[in-house]
Length: 454
Image (cartoon, rainbow, N blue to C red; front, side, top):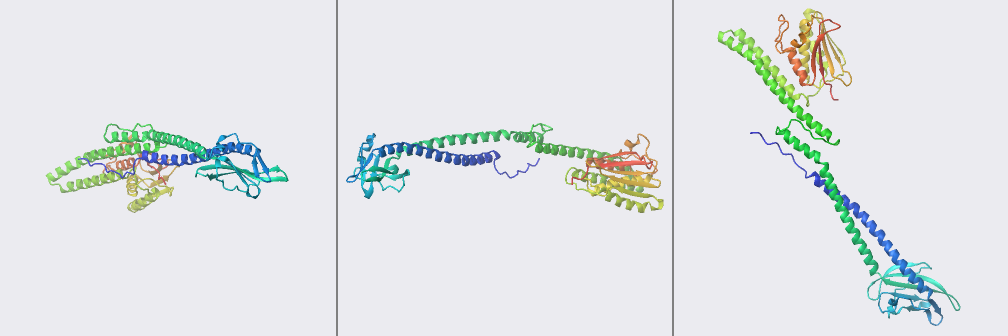
């Protein structure tokens, strides 16, 4: 039974998080704008009301007179009859020198609060009337001609503020309703845009499910530039996993094929009592098993965190070890090239690859083996192993890379060395090629491996 995939922790719906965030900021923004609009329009409504009241105040000032004995007088009544109806909310009041006061009939026996010193300026303020009603009051200090000289008189005119407040309230309701509808519409649009914008992600998830269930091989979603790299990385991961499975199948097939003959020979040797032959086949089986174990490990590392290694350093270590074994032949092993080059491969696998190639070169070289490391910018790192031996005949390079093929039966070996190097190189995304050495005249093995990302 297949294990259920682990469920990752979730932090909630991205759509609703974006919608909530959009709603919050829309509410904040529209709230501030609405407050500014209401405040500005309320001031304009008050200014318009004050302008109307000021016209009545001007008419009142034009009718004001002064008598030394009686105090302030009104030469003619105002046109609005509300100033005559008791406690109507429409009031006027004249204050002369010495505190003499004349009021409209509407004030009855009440008085407005004393005027503020205005020095001829128009003053607007809110007051409470005789019945506790809110009033809008405009007042001005004027100087009029009277017998004996000019006399200062404070003129006050009040109207109910209810009409102004009702107009402001109506404005506030309209603005709040309009902005609420606008905010709701904006949130709906944002949610719609988020849902529409996240469609490629949902389609990606659906296609991933289809890939996991085997209903499709590749992802065909058309992704915008913001998530295209994510889709490409997912597709690359799918391809890498598919390649890993194919390598595993190929590896198992190769292992079964490689073990078939040694096991048969070992069985025959045991049946015939040939202990030496059985021991040799056991060693062959051990080499095969170790080889395939290394291949499995390299296959697990390839394309992931395989680390990096320095080919010049590894080649120098291998050359030093082999120089001791070939000292009696007077064989010279030279390592040169770029010391700073780094390849994306495990150091142990690189040691095995270079060990096989350099050892193979020492078997056939007459006097010299040369290892050259080069790292062209933007290209794979190349390690060339050349010798001055007989080399290969035309057409033998492909056969030399085949598993178990030995072109020279006089040399010891199993015929697996170059095949091992070729397999490992391919696992790391590299390649191995064989050809003639233009400078030494023997074989040139060229190993190319991807450079380190650093």
